[in-house]
Image 1 (cartoon, rainbow, N blue to C red):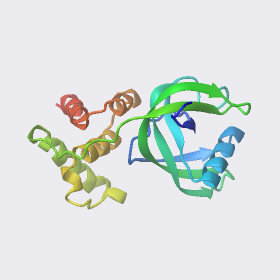
Image 2 (image 1 turned 135 degrees about the horizontal axis):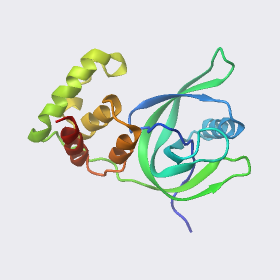
Image 3 (image 1 turned 90 degrees about the horizontal axis):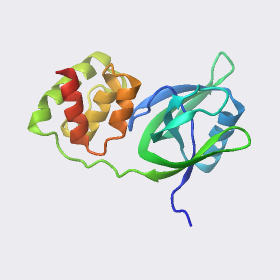
Image 4 (image 1 turned 45 degrees about the horizontal axis):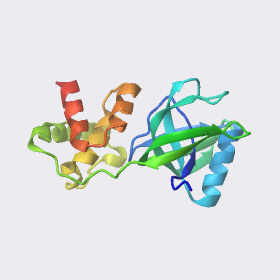
Length: 192
């Protein structure tokens, strides 16, 4: 008997990181059905980076790691389409995939461990300062974070991965790392 959950996937040309938000316009029937199911059953869906294919049409080939998305807000736009604001939650690894009759990609997933809540190490103090400067400029929901957040290796790493001008393949590589300190090491090398 399989203990891993099955998630409907919404493959994108963007990486959804834990704690980050994305805006989506939903118009394909398979994704409208997915949103309806998730809303009715109070559960999330999976977002994976597309490795091969497109966001519309034939089901794309997703990356092996993704993030569970929760719907935070929705509306109907002036274009008549469903607009969603989603937030990234827990990371997962795709075990197997199959396609539903309506073209929706389903994945049996294994959940990744939650990040430890370690403090920033001295060698990563610069990363915390860089994030502070970025947050001063972008403001928004991250303006004035609690000081304790700025000392959390995981939170600092995810916010930097979200806000730095990285390629999606670089964000995907960070998503696949289990160690928050390794993520910070990688970004520190990248910006040096």
